[in-house]
Amino acid sequence: MEAIEPKEVTFDAYTMCSFLPALDSSRAIPLVLIGYRSGEDPWFVWLVPKEGISAQGLTDDPYYTKVLRDPPAYFVKKLNKYIEETGSCKRGVEMLIDCHQNHLAFTPLVHLREQPFTHPMTVELLAAV
Image 1 (tube, rainbow, N blue to C red):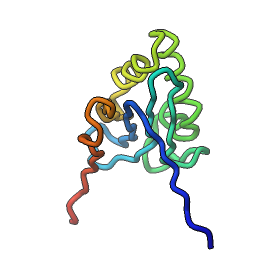
Image 2 (image 1 turned 90 degrees about the vertical axis):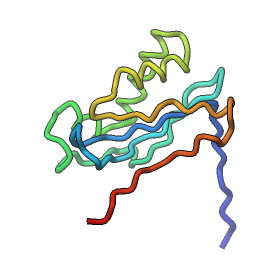
Image 3 (image 1 turned 90 degrees about the horizontal axis):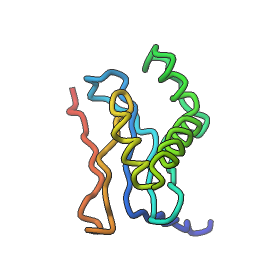
Image 4 (image 1 turned 30 degrees about the vertical axis):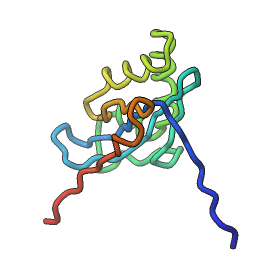
């Protein structure tokens, strides 16, 4: 067996988007990590299969059903639109975050270059019931 070679992905900043089945839900499904490096195109790190996930039991809304069925098509199209509007990858990502905070919940944009590793990603675990 060969040793696993870890791949390093470095960003100047990143955000994570999760799907909230209900706006007051404490349960979220992480969908994608979106990061960028200055002067480069954004990176998408998919946290669900690229072919999407079933919306059954999550939402009856046709808009979000379509998003969950094909997350790459949705996020790439939306982010490209905002980058084109603003002329900047950073501002495009910020606009994506600002405009989509309902069922698609984004973490605040974390800037790594300013203070590397002082902003670890945190996940809130639900208490056992």
